[in-house]
Length: 185
Length: 78
Image (cartoon, rainbow over all chains, first blue to last red; front, side):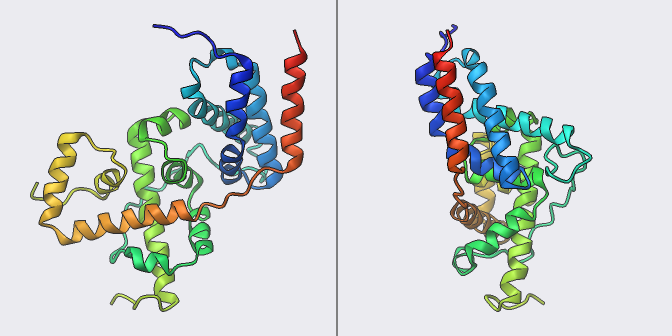
């Protein structure tokens, strides 16, 4: 069964309601606020141009994220020689799954400043931070993230696991260095 | 399930990303494995922390204006 295109006014109202979320994601995918502005602007231009392809407002959020990510990859490839954009196409992925030997529990994580957690996320390879934030912050399922990023579900699952393994190790070391917990022998 | 599941499988469990039968098998394993339970508890807490750490840095007013202007221009076009 095919559904009819969404009326333009209804589409724009819903699409604009995601501006803040899209911008936050664009900031994580780019190296500067200016690049994020450009990326979001390009995303909305493409969305406005092609809104007739959207079948149902329920798909609008995922559709906008898909445009954003494809556009981010296009921008990265266009500016590959320059330093302005971060790598998001994962051409060289590290495969380190080594989990923390002594994972932090919820109480210890509560004692770590949010800024430290943000910095640990930002220090991840972009394809890993992208996957884990789409999952944990934006609340997308693995299948939706696969659709947005153009990767197989297995790759999404693997990236999220590697992101968590790295975050756990980084935050465990931070907790030990700050005396939030004793060093493991 | 005698052997501990891979870390990737435990991570997917935290996200509800396993098929029902697999999830049931992993949960049975967790009942008898303290090490895996600690990893799952740690990742569950980490998932909450990542969500909490989200910086809501909104777009600049200039970007809002640009997008709104493009939108109204398209509305006026036939």
